[in-house]
Image (cartoon, rainbow, N blue to C red; front, side):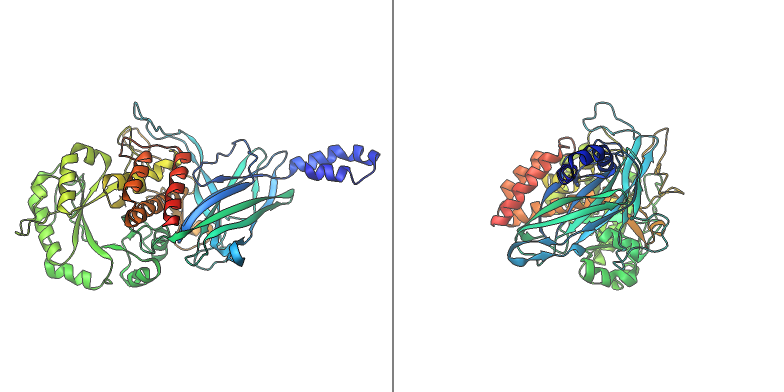
Length: 526
């Protein structure tokens, strides 16, 4: 409207009167653009806001995201694109625009929502359209626009009365100077353009290259090196890791843990377990892997209902331990496995991976194994209770962020596991009903990435949910850094305000940002 007024005063009175309706119509045809944080879901038909400037805070070596939302008002927008500027800071410091990684958010339709458990404080949002897949403006392998893509990031059109959100990751360089930076963006279209501002405060501390939170995220349909790299770029550890790529992953991404990949065949559906492999066979596998990463074996899955398997688990543990490998099993700790039978007093399970129900069934046993020095990791699957975080598409963003950082730190857990990142339907870009079972639907279960082929890149591309999970890994890092800086009491006091345990956590992003800012400021002063 300011442009209309300026033009009005630059022409004759009569001319202005005649041109005003046309100018107003032209202004209404231009894109309406605003900015929101990375912790909001932007619906296709959400009403626009008058917010054209966003303030971000981040450490060196951190990703800090935000979203740009574009709405077509009076008419359809065509040939829409985005231009980002450098971020300019103190004493001529510059964070180049190549550190701003842009994606177009692709909307998928959830036809059948997740089950809503009676009494839940954090219910699913139900059927509808959700931004989930992220279409990259640049191929991460080439830093150039993807080629031969069926689905492209830009340019794009926006239908009248609808929104299109863009996700921007600000990757703060490890050599960035402390201080305040300013940048801008411009959204262009055939119908006009709009601009906005970015303010970034870089704090005087750095997140480590090697994540402090252990993790294991399983690939099933695309186990390529490129697919692994999608997971690694989000500060998570893929499994399986191609042996020929392992050393490069350690050097480039600080790969911190590797599953050696010997399956016993035992899981919640199969109460049978193959005999333990020999120590020599285990060592042969281990020798092919680089030194440095934690080596473990994901031996059995959810076998707490099969106590007859405990002697075999002990046999596996003894041979794994003799070969220098940790034994990982998803189950509640049980006293029968607190000793592997070798005479060392070591537990048969080194990494107990707990869904919330496993912890809540035996908190005393969890406390006992932690006291022994065993590790406890967490995971989620389906919607198995009425209170813990869920990772289906139709839940609010905090569900994907609170567990790995805040809840894990509050409870003394040090890792995170997810059973699949690519359990796709036949048409994953359009059909996200990945796990219908027993009359219930779990949209997006086992699916945190999308096939890259459709968008012209090798491997896979991330979802918004994978981004939120990464942000939780960085939350864990903030708390860990505070503990190392002698601020453990303050760290845990702040942590428990947001995520005390699986039952007591807050889904309010405003509280999250307030707590993160307090932590950042405390570390900035250290």
